[in-house]
Length: 97
Image 1 (cartoon, rainbow, N blue to C red):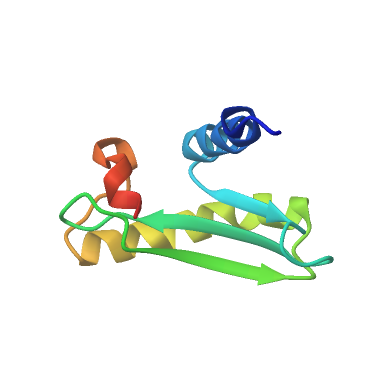
Image 2 (image 1 turned 90 degrees about the vertical axis):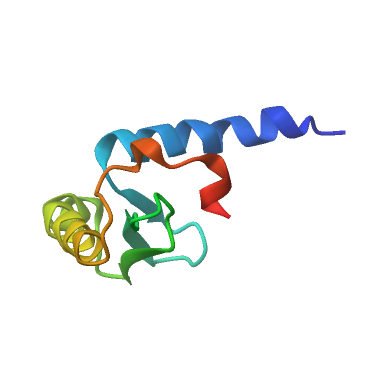
């Protein structure tokens, strides 16, 4: 039987990495040949009600690295428009539900 804690550990490490870099990437996780880049949007209640995301078969790791600043900027502008903040520092685990 698999230990659920051990199974989830790599995902937690990924989340910590995504938080540090300011965006997440998905390399063919859900569909072969399709990659994804995303940035969270934090609202005025310190909740994450949405994200901005793009996916394509043409999104290589190099391309995602180049467009990451634009994706983060767009998400931060949306967050500011709804009274939020770009930083998820105050977001609690319950706000991710």
